[in-house]
Length: 140
Image 1 (cartoon, helix red, strand yellow):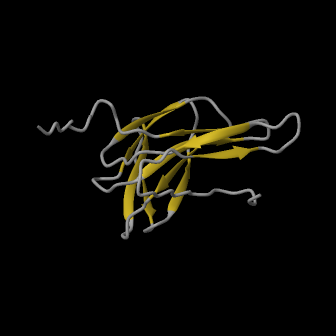
Image 2 (cartoon, rainbow, N blue to C red; image 1 turned 90 degrees about the horizontal axis):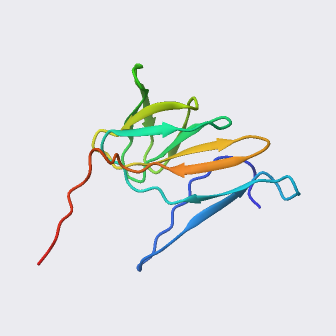
Image 3 (cartoon, rainbow, N blue to C red; image 1 turned 135 degrees about the horizontal axis):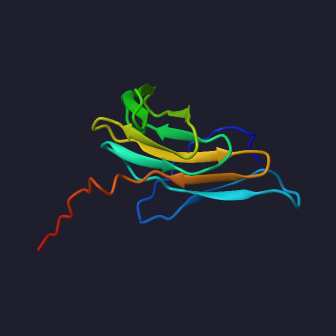
């Protein structure tokens, strides 16, 4: 029952938690819906492949208490510097069928690619770049 718009949802718990947010274009026979899943923290430069879809965007959420600047660049293009205020989310318009790099320069952000049109909606969380994996620590 929320007004149309862009929202950032944060869920916290003292135990393991699974959560998702449901969105829809309406409630009639021609309506579309999507489940938006949690986006993990991204701290290093990450490649994002944007598939075909209506009005694509990258949403970047900053859960920290300090502003961060994130570089967003289409492959082989000059980067766009995006300042994300503490506790806020910025939405960047992008093109579909392109490769982008987002680089939070060591800051911890969460990001998702979203699509929204009259006929459909979709969202996909941005995961840290698999080519730059974090170490797995095994404790005895």
